[in-house]
Image 1: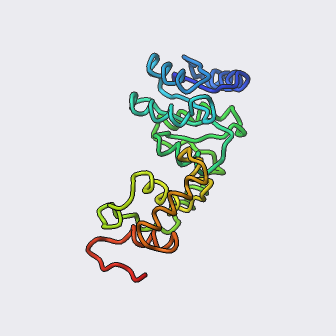
Image 2: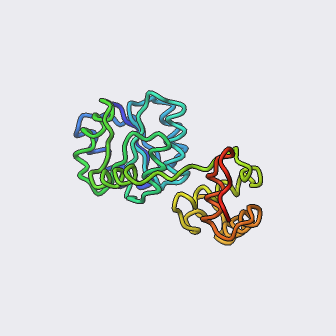
Image 3: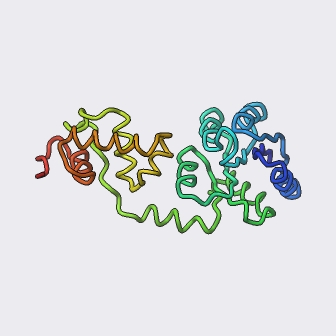
Length: 217
């Protein structure tokens, strides 16, 4: 099994490389940034690319680019982050696995072989979190063809959709690289355009099918 490894910490790369080689894997390239990971993946077309998340350029961005350009190459994240946002963003980017650096490195080769056999490589402590996410009641999505939809800018849509998913103002500001005050300005603009007093009333309008009667305000 040929693996490209990318992590901005040389000591971590050394430890992971030794674990992979001890398990019969060939590490055909090592990088320290997202761009290096993409370049190495394109150059070597490995079986698996093992990516850190919080390295220069973002491992999640690298995962999306690699899965787009090399659909036959599996991408697995190896990170210290157990953050929900990192976990789900990685899976949305196309990652086939999400492993934590605190796990036993000797288990890495078998975990990656499992990915190539069609299994998902996932740290056991995160499996419960994923199950909880899928068991949670699904919120009705916003209806982009509604009358309300035409009143909002694309950025206002982004802000409201993230808030409707349960993110806080601070979460949205980090996700969209905006100041928290700018997020609040967008929300105020939406409330004004929709002529409602609060976010929940705005969410109801944005979920309203154009063929259904408008909710009372």
